[in-house]
Each structure stands twice: as C-alpha cells, then as structure tokens.
Image 1: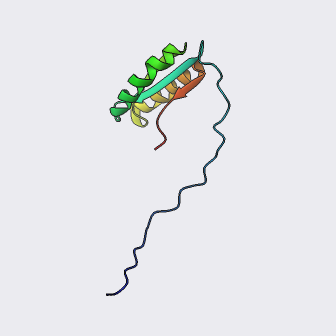
Image 2: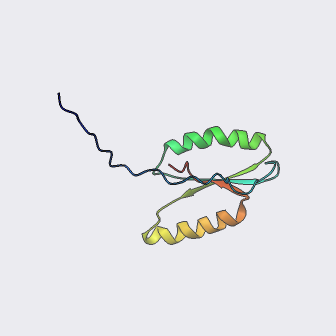
Image 3: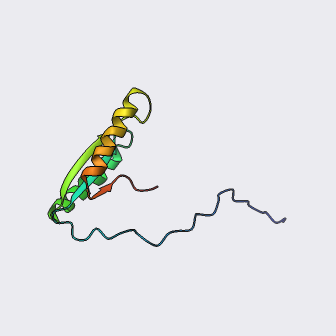
Length: 97
C-alpha cells in the first residue's frame, strides 16, 4: 500500500502576547461595559452569566447594543461606541474568536 501525504492549508497561529494588559484592580465601584449586537445572539447568554457576577463584585454594569457599522446607522454606532468607551473603566466586547 502506498503512503498518503496530507497537506494542512491552515496557517500557524500568531505568536501570543502573554501580557494581558493593565490590571483593572478591584471591580467594586468600577464601570464595566458590555457591548453586544443582534448579529450574535448567543453572546447575550454569555453576558447574562457575567453581568450578575460583575454586579456581585460591586461593578456598575453598562450594556450597549451596537448597530450597523456602515451606511446611515454606521455614524450613529461609532458615536455611541465613542461615548461608551469614554464612560467605562473596562469593557467586554467579544470573545476574540
């Protein structure tokens, strides 16, 4: 029987940056933003799990539903995101996948 060679077209993952960024410190008294949209409905389940835990840790949770990124709604979305980013100490905006 002949030998079979399987080629994998996927690229190697990028080098990971082990630095998680600055420490937020205790959550008590912090404003934590939760951004979501209608395109990824299952993300709401994630936020429904995290929000009570953030509140239990003393954080003030702010949710923002974003809309279109282009067209007429795009300008409004980016304006809302700018206000949101300025008003929170940290934000959960996705899983990075």
